[in-house]
Picture 1: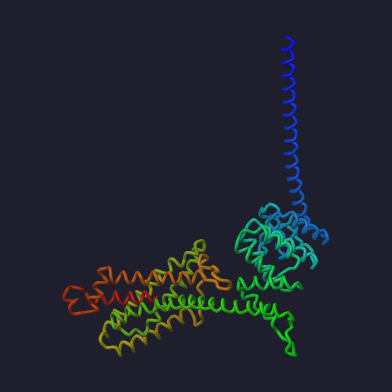
Picture 2: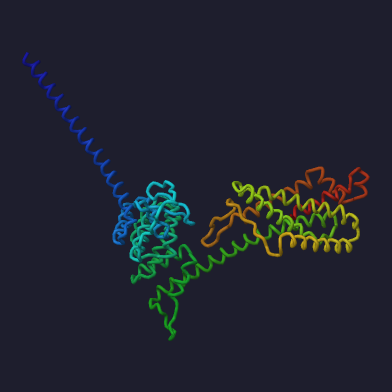
Length: 469
């Protein structure tokens, strides 16, 4: 009996202990959650207050607000800080921060991004000076260097490379230790190398020169050449021979690398420019090579295709601005058909009467070219007109430092390859191509076989003119 009571007492004590432990755990858990939540709320409140202080009338408070925003590290502050730097930040009478667009006719709330109607508002600009701008530059650089986006970090590093700031060197060193993107790491290392060249420490300078030598960046060539300059007496301004030797080696590496880069760039630009001439030559090969016609107006077919593209651009800009980027897709076949139709008209009205008379053909087509040139001048004026790039053909990608391959030039090369293959397929794999080759080789025999040589002449001349256009 006593043992049963003892067992019951022991069990009840265990239950109480377990309950007490659970209660303690729950209390700690609740306190932890409340603490984290309170910290988040506190940080959010601090961010909002600091952001609102950017519109304070006191420069010292604006300066403190910028420093706090940089230390908080919230990337949401970047648009407001950049707007303050670029003079696009304004404050309404109730203290709302408004970020204006580039034209200044529209704006949105800096805190939540909501659009704001500017018409009924009286706005003022925050008053900042050089002291605030220096702190602002530091805060923007800090936020960009610690951003989660590799693109933003790369942009920040690139800006530092162009306009180095000794105040951000320590931050760049810390960012480099954490950086896992190779391209960003490379730019960070070059930023530190640029600063290291100014150091009094020989080892730092040698390390910087070796880093520049490793990457072969042409932007540093002037800095390295400064280490090899001499004074009026012929003495080197840089007294340390080891540093001079490393600098000379780095300059040689940069020059060799730049030579190969320039050759590659020239090859690409030559291909892109030659591709345009290849289209014109392909059309000429059809009219002269297949038909034996000396067409002095062939270059004007290219001109007609260009002006057809210009007209399509203006039509889309005027009547279909929402799909303006796609005007080029429509302009390509339009340019082909305009040039081809003009070519067919010329062949049917003039050139077909001059087959076998090369001198008369040359003079006639030369006269036609003058007529076409003057007609275009009357319609469009003597000044050159501009054809805009669609957005998807604007820009390019960097293959080497300083060598950018524009998308529009790449598109030209690919398009010319497509046209050449298409013309080859047309002449070699279709019945029209077979008839063209038959008429070219033996016109009388082809006529006896039932091929309409007049139609083939018309189609062939139209094809040559269309390809040129």
